[in-house]
Length: 245
Length: 374
Image (cartoon, rainbow over the protein chains, first blue to last red):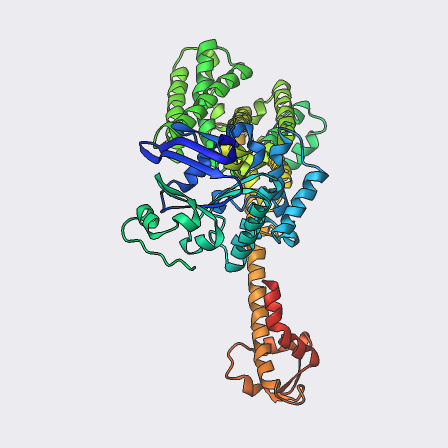
């Protein structure tokens, strides 16, 4: 029965130094959902994604992608890191960054060719950045940089997408463009796990949600579990949020 | 001997040719690998490694008792690598930040190396003289064998660079992402670091322990100013490095054998300063020029817009107006009116100005144009 879940996390515990960042997380992400991970700063949202992707080594616990360990299922998974995690003054162009998404399937040493370039151009077009393909990345706006990162993940042509705050620091136009792409991906049967900060938009954007604050508070359909009770448990006492229904 | 004579002699004198070729190759490999150090924000690592190499040189001499360059450099390589791995260990195993670890290793190893050097100098062994040339470098001591070694190492690192180009590039840009794609980032990282250590060790004889890091960083920093492509940057850095090496050696050899290290580094610094000021995209000079031009253009357009506000309700847009009525708008001068006329946006006659058809169109489209420029 395990294989019904796109991502399955069991007893995951992660600590930097002494303090645990994630404590005994059990989480199952059903296939085809668009899931938000919400929680306060320091709740371990990014850490959770990074542990699933093998960037951070957990102290205990296991992760399965469609029932198998991550390193056997890499090609099914794409990752959009936080925009601030890289130096945008790096000497390269937008299309070059997008092309990096093909490196995984190319493997060691082999260089990207025409096929990879075509895929990169298509991805740039999907995120509306084709006109900027040869632009030096430092000359892109924050929203454009975020779109380039998204295009790089699209090129990976994965089944599961992990995104770390894709809406951070982008304007309304870009936010709408990005959420439309995410919704399209879900329609195509992909699974999306998104670290998200804006509680107001959770019901509108997502159909699945996980509340996280070092421990997992709750996970399930937005309609059933996105309520004051869980928000209060996650963010502290008396947290109220207006949910636009 | 003047520098010009030096270059003349280059074609006839075997020793000079060897030395020049050596420093050119050294500059090229340092520029190439230095680009990686700069882009990884590990600029100080080179400084720590070169200082960490000093005790290795001294120990190699103490153990073998011989001054064979290759054995001394082997000692330097070993202690350089030990220093590097200690730095990495300290940053990953303790709470220390990398700058602290770098500073600690740099001064500890260098201090120990200096201690050994003074100890060696006190020994009643005639063979000991000349080890201190590794502090500031002496290109004149390069022999053909050294240059051959440099060429081999450069060839190997160039092939590795070309082979793993894609892997190096993605690691430099986004390490975490590289991990998720299944690349062994530790392996790529160690590969880069190893070649940086190797380049530093090769340069010790020519440039010396103290200034070796500048040889890595200066050409790369200068090259970054001229291009937005990683490949071009590395090629440029190699060229700048090679020229710094050649000119530095020429100057130092023609002036009664000055220490080569400081001279090469000063030549490299000239490249850096020149690039910071004169490179077209990022240079200070052109940035200032662009900035001023932009301001001037904006001022002109502001004036034109103000004029547009006056004429737009007139039936005849080219009806002349007195310059005086512009007085409650601060942005114009005689010169700027002249410029507007040069652009054929207005015509000036005596104390009056009149807008042209062209200026009217320009002013009308000003707002929508600004939107397009965004």
